[in-house]
Image 1: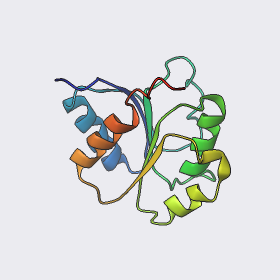
Image 2: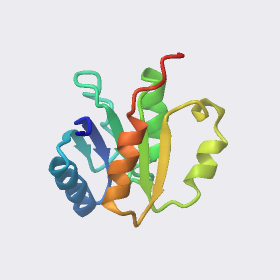
Image 3: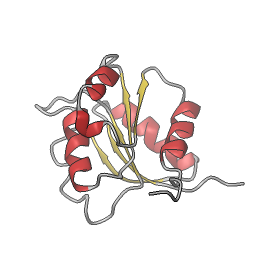
Image 4: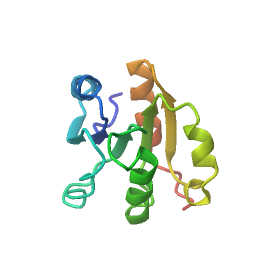
Length: 133
């Protein structure tokens, strides 16, 4: 049984990590449709080709952080799954403190993380919800 092939947006400020994620997702059969080294222009082309999931780091070299970016995405697309991959260990507590994010499809993986864990998490986050909605 093959897993669904996903369109992925990546926002990661480390160029080497970004390249690793892009190569890994391609190997897994997914398509990286957007990748960003900073969070500033992330929403510019977002509407033209919606990703199936966003993979976002927390810290960027701009004034914005991954949580700001996620909130901006979720205001326009509340059902968008978002995976944070970060070294910021307190991110889950920050998410828990924001009521707007409580019913969203979010997950946090703390670096260093095994690539297989990333794949399992994105597959779980993008699974079709039960039909009760």
